[in-house]
Amino acid sequence: MNASVLSRDAAETPRPQSMTAHAPRIAVLVPCYNEAPSIAKVVADFRAALPQADIYVYDNNSSDDTVAIATAAGAIVRTERRQGKGNVVRRMFADIDADLYVMVDGDDTYEAAAAPRLVAELINNQLDMVTGARKTAWEHYRRGHRFGNVLLTTLVTMVFGRQTEDLLSGYRVFSRRFVKSFPLLTTGFEIETELTVHALDMRMPIGELETAYSDRAEGSFSKLSTFKDGFRILALIGVLIKEERPLAFFGLVSAVMALLAIALALPIIFTYYQTGLVPRFPTAILATGLMILSVLSGACGLILDTVTHGRREAKRLRYLEYPAPIFDPISL
Image (cartoon, rainbow, N blue to C red; front, side, top):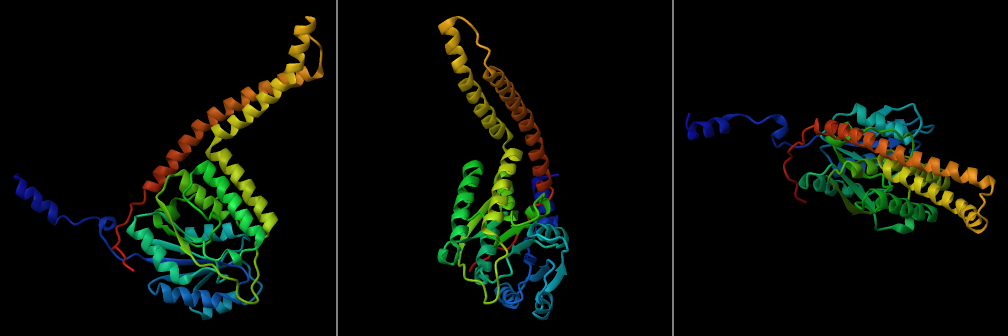
């Protein structure tokens, strides 16, 4: 068979669906809890910004008229009974089938008009996640929220790499392969942190665009507790460092305990060289115990690092099970 026949056969062979450019199916995901004052406007604004998208409102045991208002506004309304934003997002990611997912809070603080830009950024640059970074209106933050966001973002980027300026933004666009391969574990407002750390740890292609951020609608109130949820997010970051960077985590613990053991042992060594006698200080037992624990901690770090490497490979293979779709480029 000559080259021209092979070339003709290849040209006539249809490409798989995943390799054929097509318009994406977009789902707008809106987790809600008592957002009656704002949910109708959120649904209307995102329908205007993304007229081709299906808009899903997942209610999380609201005690007001959120469900009735969202239904009247034309959204597809569903319910998640387990309380917590993480539980709602887990349910949405499991239930809804689409090519692209736009996740946004139902409090009308995020800029719906920016949604096409976020979607275009993801499609045109073949990314897996694009975050709407709240850059233009810091005055709308409570002081504690602003400080906490900067602190937690800095901590995460120091450990996992600097690819985000707004760790806690609830405005994001995801690819299907991200959503369907994400092992979501958290139950509450820590969800944004877990999303970001997962993307950074898996070295996924991600992006970020500035979006406007505004005050809540009159009568709406924040469900986020500055200190309670801040400490929960900080605790989650610690857990994620332990889980995803065990060698660094346990290595640091090992080093701290070794330094303490040496500090406790120095007076004993000094006394021995002065008198030739080994004093029976209680601290000698403590120093020995700390040094043993230091060695064990270092060994745990080495073992768990191997386990984490295997888990990361498994997550990567799961991610690669979903082919990267080819969409027609979007120009704005």
